[in-house]
Length: 341
Image (cartoon, rainbow, N blue to C red; front, side, top):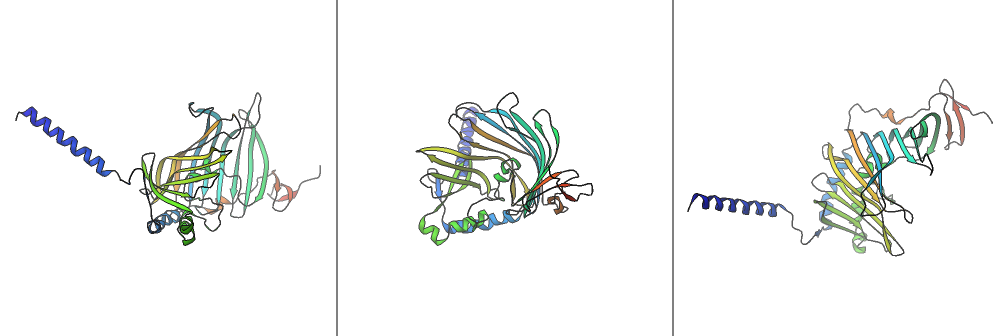
């Protein structure tokens, strides 16, 4: 055999082995997916719990913006809508959170100056939410503002702008019996849920990542699913919620997490993600929120819980919806009754 023939034979053997390695390394679960038993889900739950309990505090510098298009086939076009902030969270379900919004630009009316901007701080101390507005006005010219508000409960936080909407650590669900994904999973494999076939767990590829897909039984008018990456602490990779109106399905939320970072052992945080939605009115645009984390610090041993306690500066007019009172903060930072007009 000539040297040329030997070289050709070696390369043929090498390519064959390489193809076999790639093929064998791919999980094979039938055509597209493999159903997971309740026993397998039970074994997964502690891993999800570990990630949920592994986050004690976090600080995120992030920005986001909105893109639009008229048709699904059109390219996305960036709009002036923009959001930049620093956020602190204690990592607990409905826990404390503070958001310093450096710049917010939103569309507020039609006409020559359709976009307005403002900067503000909003904080939830575990009981009430305080809102401290600093500047407001047209997007290209801001004016000082000295207005504040106190409201009961948690409100005014944009989860898709600070990243928590793209994580499993800040689970949101109407069922108060399940305040985390681990609890939700346990609820899904209860004897009653299994008998009713109320939920489905399968392994499925999503954007070239083998994921655990979790879906409640589709209703006649809606469906939703979550996809988690088992190789990265069961971090959220995707979410879909859609409903039907007059027999036509409309996408309300289509989330994709494009980049993750391990911010603590076993805890992964989204660095880049998007959330798409369909038109909200006839002939309205398709919209996409683009989120990007610029800096993330987790489990800081020197984290100061006082960051969640907001005070209103001197001269602020405050509308306290908890007490029903309106007042002005004096030079000693003491509330005094607002004079009658």
